Image (cartoon, rainbow, N blue to C red; front, side, top):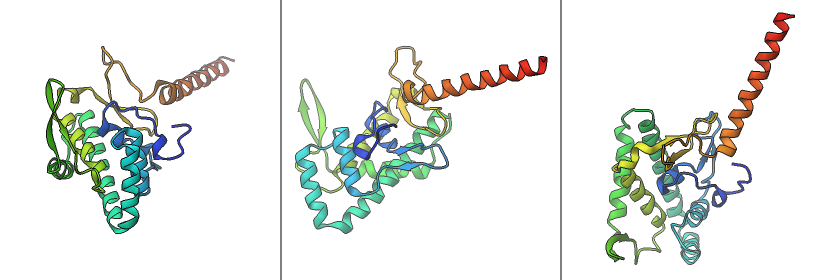
Length: 214
């Protein structure tokens, strides 16, 4: 998480949009989480960074937001509620527990809202969802997130979702390694901190044993 200045500079380590969104809190599993979505502008910055919206859409939504500040407050609250529901759902799944019904209801409600704006359009030799003609809706960024969460929850990939065991980290990610051996959100970050701590503990233990002998 070094070098993070705002939501638009967060590392995208989740491998799926919904997991990256769940990770918009630093040290999610600690007693002192770091919130990165403090405003609707933060939500747009992250959405642009994650590829949900374009630069042009970002500028338009910022302009619309300035004209409807009361609406953006409600949308930010919905975004936070959706994010926390996604985090708890997938964290529970990783731990082998059934997600809480209230969290599933939040995701379901967000998904139903998203689908009401979706169009099925041709793409290459198949079809896909498109949010075309609705890009100026202030809650537009939430639609792709809700859709991603629902798709992952119903996908065989669900078994590959993991939670970083780094002290207080809790970031979620999809393990795409061939043998499912990925352990950390980032081996050079959380992984390295744990290795350094373990090395220190071994040195302390070795020193203690030497002192006992002497």
